[in-house]
Amino acid sequence: MLPVIALVGRPNVGKSTLFNYLTRTRDALVADYPGLTRDRQYGLVKRADIKSLVVDTGGITATADGIDGVAVEQVERALEEADVVLFLVDTRHGIHPIDEEIGQNLRKLGKQIVLVANKTDGLDANTHIAEFHKMGFDKPWPIAATHGRGVVELLRHVSNIL
Ligand code: GDP
Ligand code: MG
Image (cartoon, rainbow, N blue to C red; front, side):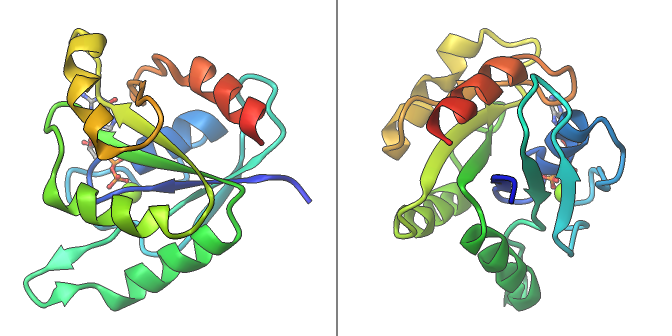
């Protein structure tokens, strides 16, 4: 059985974009409209010689009616089978209250969590990711999923902790 890397985070942080980059596919739906990936989406990682599966999740969708129950259930199942969880946040936005909520829930799992600061393209990554240190995970890993910036370094780190 291959190790499983789960991509988790609130809608629109770039999970599906990263999934597509990692798998060299366009299988995950990427959109400005948040919450579109409802089912778990599996793929084989085809970057940096890492033998692993990656699973995109629909994120945790907070709607006017509250948190979307189906999406939450899918995320929970993906988390159960994950060996490493990549917890994505949006560097352009900074820490969002939902990020903190997700972070608290993830911590309870006792899994390996890697905090990934996406959308660093055009930014001075070191300056902008500084605030994510206070989320209480190991250092945030700066990437830009659209360009692949930082992704190989991130994967090397993931292989080391698998
Ligand atoms: P998801 O809801 O977490 O799956 O997010 P998506 O992958 O659908 O991406 C949401 C939006 O963010 C899309 O418009 C993407 O093109 C954009 N996006 C994703 N990654 C990056 C990135 O590294 N840099 C920038 N500038 N935009 C990104
Ligand atoms: Mg998505």
